[in-house]
Each structure stands twice: as C-alpha cells, then as structure tokens.
Image 1 (tube, one colour):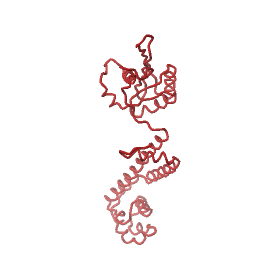
Image 2: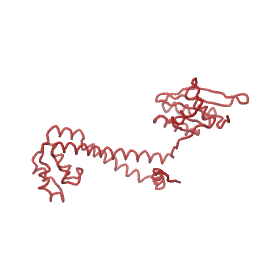
Image 3: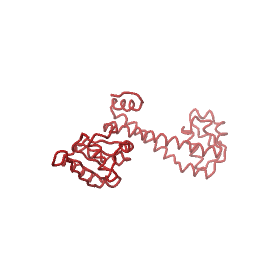
Image 4: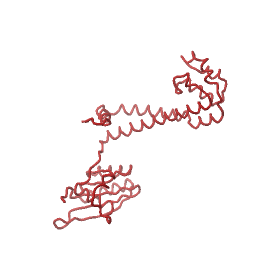
Length: 266
C-alpha cells in the first residue's frame, strides 16, 4: 500500500495521559521506524510533545476526537506547524485490518500513514469561538425557560393565577407580586396593588389571581430557583449580545449558513 504521509504520528488521547506513536522512514528502502512515547496531558507536557514531534520531522498527525480532551492536543500540534487530522472514533472502528497486538496510537499512525483516515471538519479559530458562544447562548435560554416553567408549576400548585392575567411571569408587575408572596404577604388586595403601568387597570382580576394557598413550602421552592439566578442568565445573555457584535459580519453569516442543511457556504 502506498505511503501518503511518510513522517506521521498517531495519537491516543486520554484525560491524563497522551500516547504517541511515530512512524518514520527507516535506514533501508521500504523500512519503517516506529517509536512510542507517552506524555502527561498538562499543557507544558503537550508543548514538549509537539516540540519532540517537530524535532523528528513529523509533518502529519492523527487522533480520535475523544470528548473535549483532544482540543489542547490539537492546539499544541497546530502551534508547532504540524498538520492534524482529527477523525471520529466510529470512522476509525470501521477501517478493516486492525491488529490486536497494536496500541491504539500505533494503529492510528499506520492508518494515517496510508491516508485511510477521513478528517473531521475543524472550523477556523474565529468561527469556532462564535460557535461556542452561540451554543452557550442556547443553553442559557433553555435554562431560563426551564426556570420559568418550574415557577409556573409552583404557582399553579398554590392556586396563584398571575399568568392568567399578566402576559408573562417575567413582567415587572408579576415579579413584584411573586417576591411579595415569598416575603410573606398573603393579602390579594395588597399583592394586586403592586401592579405597574397598564396592569393597574386589571387590579380586580389580579386580586382574584393572587388569592390562593401559597405556603412556606411554595416560598422555599421558589427561593431554590432564586430570581438572582434568572437575573444572572439575563446578564449573561446581555454580555453575549455585546460579544456577537464584535465578530465580523462575514463570519457570523458563515456560521448561520453552515447550520442550514444543503447550503453551500464560502
């Protein structure tokens, strides 16, 4: 079989240790030299690994995309000018011919030596940064929604129907009434008069909505989902909006395009 990458490394990534196998040209025609070495997964050790490979003249390296553990390994190798092939474990398992006496790193090196590994897409640094932040924004929104649903269930159990009158439990009026309930206020009239702005036109309905069986147990459940938690999510989303504005329009358009199946992006 033809050798595509003559000076190649195969890397088996774990949380605490990295196993590296290097395949280099041997002394005679068609001969190959194999070296196997392990490194700790600390950043300083990864830099030593990259320097060791660069010193051996390794130009290409391959590894599985194992969780998030491959990220620092990739950055260390790329910083040393080594071309990195990151491939999925499923793809590697489907390549036939595995010898049981080989270490994973040796098998990866042998496969990549012959060009049998299909690299996964690794976005540019700016695109990757934007993708991380958009995914984190999605998680924050999901957390805020889940917290709102938990609050609605607590109020429903207590017979408090504020969201049947107010457009949302996130309005200023609704938040004031809920905080008053937690503080111990139970008079529906007092709670209803906490309404602001146009909500004050609905005070009679709010009195009915605030008349329930809100107990200390309900207050405790609401305190577990502290308003400061929701406020913190709101602050995080506000910071992300500022960060998004710092990315170039072209990069943002590319990420949006890349998320649509069948769309060719350039």
